[in-house]
Length: 92
Image (cartoon, rainbow, N blue to C red; front, side, top):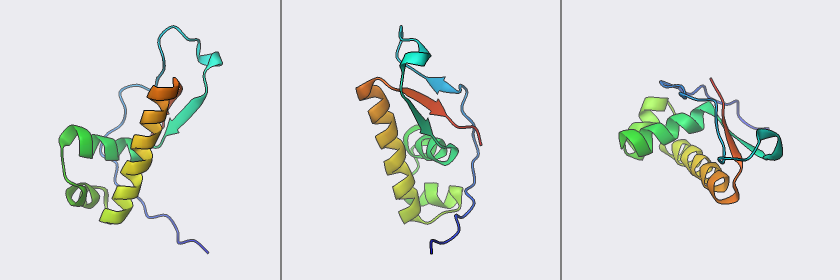
């Protein structure tokens, strides 16, 4: 049986709810959902420039868990850009 998910500290919310390729109607796009914890991980690591341990401490998770979260987030963002999918940002 899996362990219960630990609550993550999220300090920032997205300014917008989605990003999509220009000129393509939303109804014609596949969507990828970026979770609030993944958004926060991207913000801490890539915008603020904090290292993984600092970011993990800020979110209240282990460094390994933070590494897993940031890897998933970067994968989703790359897939959205490369394959032209809409990136939906989940609000807490």
